[in-house]
Length: 382
Ligand code: SF4
Image 1: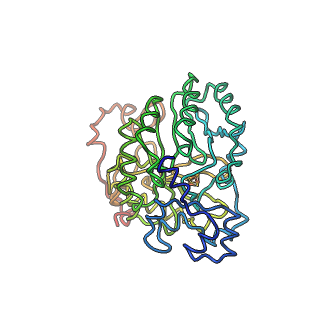
Image 2 (image 1 turned 60 degrees about the vertical axis):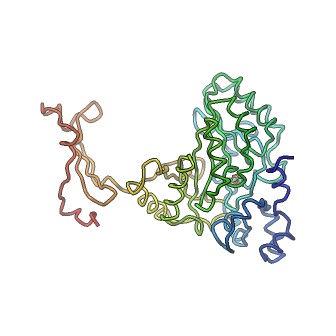
């Protein structure tokens, strides 16, 4: 048995352990166990510094989970967009392929609780019809292996899936959606990396939410993936009491870049049953983004999105940098609140714009962009 498998075995998961380790009332612990089981592996448990800290909140069951039974179990309508078991096909050229119900840690905020945990929740019998669907739909060029966590499969099982996918000529890209580099980095072994790199191009999206998750172990895991030629991106979720603070997110994204992980998405939390106590306002998200853009390297700034309820997909949000926009010009605010005017050029999309229509010579970029004083907007400088 490999070390990571032993660590899964040694995870905290029983009602007795919840009562003993976290002083949860037994009745509540039983209800929580019934609602969504716990799995806290020894590595992630070792990151907890004190009761209620950002690591604790992400993994220790909380009685608040029991208070919102009206909320949706499948807010993103993944099941409604599932043409065959184990596949969700929402976007035109890519598909989500659920290959296991197991994870290295059961995150209390998970939006896929209905699918995660018990072995029966995602049936391995569905794999064949999923492969068939992928073979028959040649518009799919990008497959995201998810679950659960695909790295909960053994190397041999995962390799069988990759081999089969690589036989489908229209599948250009394979992505692994895995939280293992963050929650159980011991899973990233040289054997795994050597196997994965036979099936390039492979990309990996992982999920760090807090700077305390960046440790020597997770650093090593991410560097091993990067050394195997696998670009690693991070998808984080803004959560109350975890990372709803611009300084925390700034530290996280800067540290991620240092371990060769590119901040990719920053999500608003989904409206998920049992996880609404994590939700924050959209304004909090915009404030975090505003504190990143311009204040740190653009490489560190993720796309801020809401995964639209009802299956609308990811919709990007930005603080309001455009103060006015017409055919002639666009008035913009920069990260310091200073205001600039950019002349809008004429082309087929904007025949009334500045430039060719007036027979004027094109100006250089530096001539076109100039700071303007607009009395009504003076306050925006603050
Ligand atoms: S690893 Fe992902 S799928 Fe598994 S419990 Fe956490 S958020 Fe849910």
